[in-house]
Amino acid sequence: MKSTTSISTTPSKSIAIMGIRGIPAKHGGFETFVEQLAPYLLSAGWAVTVYCQEEGTAPTWESTFHGIRRVHIGVGRDTAFNTIRFDWACISHALKDRPSLVLTLGYNTALFNLRLRAAGIPNVMNMDGMEWARRKWGPMARGWLYLNDWAGCMGATHLVADHPEIARHLNSRVHARKITTIPYGSTSIEEADTAPLKDLGVQPGKFVTVIARPEPENSILEIVQAFSAKKRGVDLVVLGNYRAEVAYHAQVRAAASSEVRFPGAIYDTTTVHSLRKHSILYVHGHRVGGTNPSLLEAMGSGNAVLAHDNHFNRWVAGDGAGYFKDSSSCRDALDDLIDNAPRRHEMSSATLKRAHVTFAWRDVLAAYAFLLSDVHSWAHGRPSTWQRLPASLPQEPEST
Image: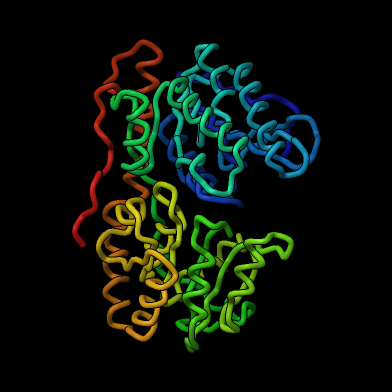
């Protein structure tokens, strides 16, 4: 609901969360995370503000969402440039609003956040992944992201890494005491309606899923080639927006057999949950990143997981998952797993256990609440232990 009057945030602990498109979650992992974190902080006594990006051009307006203050900023169509404009506008608003702490999710415009530092507003920044390392970016974009990676490290009050490998990267730039490792959380899906599957033309227990942005570093082409190497007797459902005018997207579609389905980008929670819960196998091709939300959601759904073999995925999925390095090894793994229900059941049990033990939301949210309160205390001249904090959750894979 819209409001023309400003909602005061003057309690002793007020936090502004920026770097996302807003809540309720409609886009990705950080939005889902904030949908969990914001009510948690509210119940712990914080006054919580979440900035929301709007496609209209109406003046900034406010609303409440389950007691959480939302500041809506219209910047026009959802483009990369307008997202940059949105980040600038969020910081400009926060400079006037003066929250006692800011939580910034992502470092893509960390240079702008130096304005918060200059104004004396403490800022905890989740550095997400090493975005500048992605092959999809050209030289100018990589340079911008690399510069902002440094700006985030140097300018933020404290850094959050969502994976030990990200923490090691940050530690090459700042002291370890400025970094806390807290991974993303995994949501358990106990049951899911099968009705949405009918609209997609697939049957429960008769399909494999891939849920990822259609980019080369997510190994989509290799997965589709591997699956399409022979008749499988099951479908491969590849979520994402595949456009004919994009060369890589066209290449993926051209490699697909008749058993590969491209239903588009699906954000409806009921449909996504149904796809995850009733899939026999989740294939995760990400090569760059930290604790990937899509992988954790598959684990929390009890999926058997076949992942690209790298140190990011190895730490998240642990020893209970299967791994591949290229199209050939992915094909071999699919040959084994699609017709091996007992093996898939073992993998499912192992990844589900790891999701519950290592990536439980209750532990993730408690770790964030402790860290934010501790940094808040330090920044406002009260006793704090943040400079001596260890990583809040386990650093190495547990045996499953």
